[in-house]
Length: 279
Image (cartoon, rainbow, N blue to C red; front, side, top):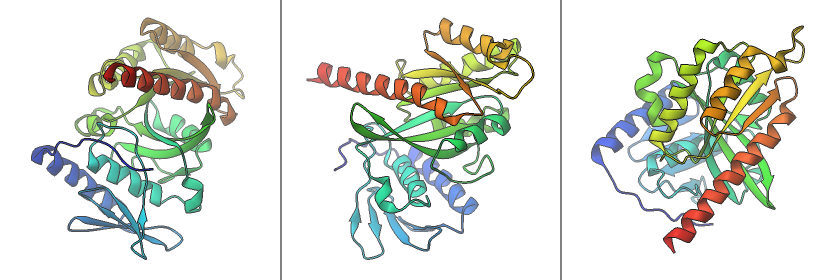
């Protein structure tokens, strides 16, 4: 697979992106080393890969070109470098990263301490066990099958605490789909925060960003968590914004398959429509 995209260089945007990348390198200095325009990524198993910042191409230690395709024409090269670097850090064998399509999906919620462990439970790889490894966001990977295609989803969980506001838009920009997460403890007062998340995601990624709403409930709770006020709040916001709503158990990560397949199908449908219009 080859990468086909148009990238318009913006010195100001690129400087900010490089600053973000350097912050990531500093936070993960055990695995990253930035030297000029080349990033060295050392996997936990000791294997090294080199990423060219200007082209986002990836090379192995033998200088053999490794192609990772991010199928998003508008995704800046620097974002692809960050995403690819994180892929290289996974503990899975390199061959297992083969895929037909790779999509960046943003997850937004209220409580990382509750929701991020759930995200990790159905992901085959993540950058770390603690939240905010990427300064206001964390990263996980989910592989699914849709219409006979092997699809890898980059799952970027962003933190909506006020102290991350300035950097959050950098994380969500370039998303090809999004999921809003609520849990059974969500309060009616949280509705405004959910709405802000939806509006921000759409404004950063075109108004028609494919999106789903996922309500998380705990089956071990003594109360009827699935029919809790928290999930009803999420369902009402989803209905108001014409977004599909799914209830998922935090005790059974397999329940994530249905909503993620739905979101991927929405992305595929949107891409197909855009291709027809452009042709």
